[in-house]
Amino acid sequence: MANTNETIAARLEERFTSKLERVPSSCGELTFIVKPQDLLEVAVALRDEDDFSFEQLIDVCGVDYLEFGQDEWTTHSATDTGFSRGVERQPVILDEADEFSAERFAVVYHLLSLQHNRRLRLRVYTGKNNPPIIPSVNDVWNSANWFEREAFDLYGVLFDGHPDLRRILTDYGFIGHPFRKDFPISGNVEVHYDAEKGRVAYKAVSIEARTLVPKVIRDDNRYSVDLKDTTDNG
Image (tube, rainbow, N blue to C red):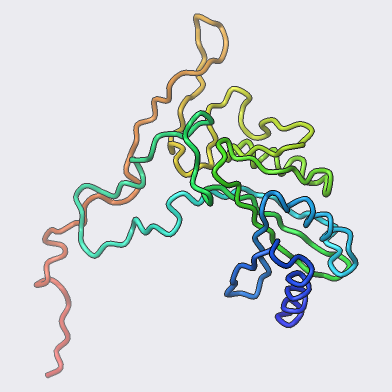
């Protein structure tokens, strides 16, 4: 399989030259980065050309790389205040916010060639645009329709050319995009029955934030060194 992947990787690099950038893999998988402006051309070629024949789109998913690579949990000492990850988050970033970092959001496409029994992953960074936007591949693989709606709903990525881009998992009145890393864990609003209005309505979330890791390492007589078993080698 490794030799097969290297063969197809060489063909891809020869065919698309600078339009694809290979991502190193520790498990032999094929992943390439493609720019948004090259996505449709590359997608059509991957689907139609005999050397590739990736006729099936398995999945499309969004990724938020905010704080990617930052280690928040490494510690060698006890704490009586807890870690911040469970309760302290950045403010929600909505569409009117400033531009994003160029590699904040990405959309990942998982392709399958039934003819050649090969798999390929494409990654597209959305760039600094806010809201993030890239071309829709719905006209290339029509299975992208609901996948792109999901990425829009959960990450706020817009797909130019999508025939019906609207929320698919959250309610139509939902505020924000819940899979973004800066979205509050408890959300922004909650639903309740409003007796005066006689219907279900939204209100500000009332869930109390809580730390999700232990705050104190116990230190009492149960953990005394004098009570631990000892080994008598005499």
